[in-house]
Image (cartoon, rainbow, N blue to C red; front, side, top):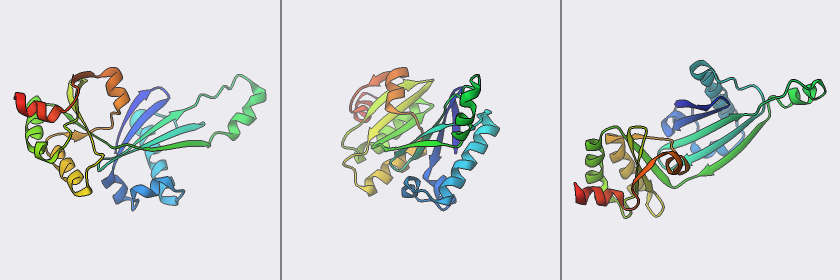
Length: 198
């Protein structure tokens, strides 16, 4: 489980499917109200407080994004409570433990590479498995390869993820973050372009 602070009131947590399996949770369980999921959320909030100083009291908005074969991204946003209005205080305190949960699923596989040579080795190894070679970005001194998983059967998907995991690491960066803050290097068929040019 990896976590990072996005702002004073927002954190991002990346859970691998191994993190879920260790706790006896299947990815489909995240959509249901079961005690194991509540325990996992409590554990995440405790770890967020310990590692990042993120205090999870108050109304929380929780977004869960499932990524194929990589895991889940959980974005927790704390709403601000206004304690200056005494009349509203009781009403706001009643909302302290309210959660607004949004679930979504993506067909994107996103991996980060610290070294261009590792990216090239990954591209050459994974190239025969791909129909579409994806998009390449540069973001915070890393190379970010984003591939679409739609149309891939499960066996091929696991093979692609296994290869990419050898050379890079799964990342929870969304397409929106990459488009806004990253630098687009190769817009389409990035793996094949890398293999042809280098």
